[in-house]
Image 1: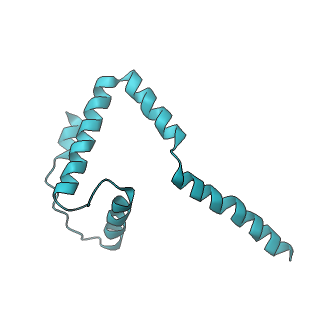
Image 2 (image 1 turned 90 degrees about the horizontal axis):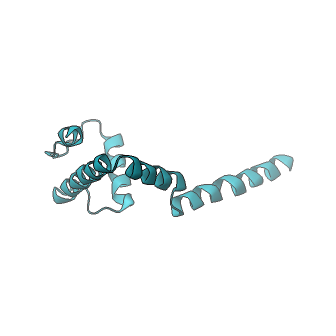
Length: 99
């Protein structure tokens, strides 16, 4: 009986935390992004533009349907299941980030 009580408490502590974190904005990520934007605005603008261009390339080539997180999750699942997955990515992300 004691083990069941401990398991019940753990489930009540762990599962809601995971659910809440998936539903809310990561405050640390937002704070870091704001600080990064304030301290180095030129680099921040170029970085976000490069990532946005890459995201648009993924959408235009049909690798993902839209910017919804579930599309990224699905892509990561495909990549994890198939080591030889061929994706038609012609965008030079490395070159964009260097620029």
